[in-house]
View (tube, rainbow, N blue to C red):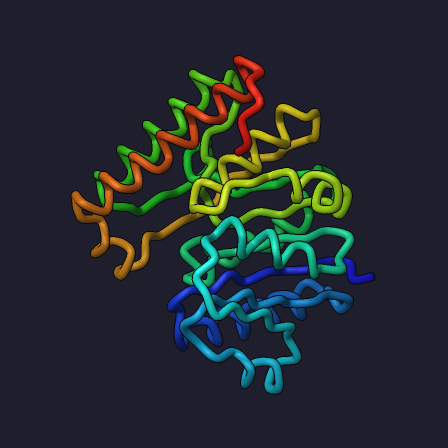
Length: 239
């Protein structure tokens, strides 16, 4: 069993995936972490086999777009680490904080980077920031949890949580991040948010159109209401 498994979810990521793999392996070497695995979970768009040969990573490919939640859940099922994490390969979160992710994962069942707690630094277009903070406020209000940033792609989990709880989380979209954190909080697992430095990448910033924002708000709003029905009203709703 590895001490740590790190998953890199990839959809239309192209060459920057290799940059992320190189940076991760460099960081692990800096931290003295030798017993680890890196897993690329890739949908449709890119052949990661050269990275397997070059860097010794594990590679999971899907010929169909699975959605963030399903792709991550399938990757978690293959991970062998005592602790299992994932990071977004655009490295919007400054990679210095990978060490904190690993450190806190030894003490807590679920760990997530946060862009909205004291000590964090955030550079993001106003509209994205506005809707993101509103979404997290809605989660706090409707679900009664102390959660400031559900969507940061910088998380880690204990093997026990991965084994027992991940299969129960049905959400397949980008709202999976919120669903998994709420599930952990509502089922009694320890959850740690820690501050990070986060810079929106140019390609993300340029995608912040009104149409994209509307679709995101609608999707995440539906998931919040489903979680409210499940956790506050105790209805048999799958999330």
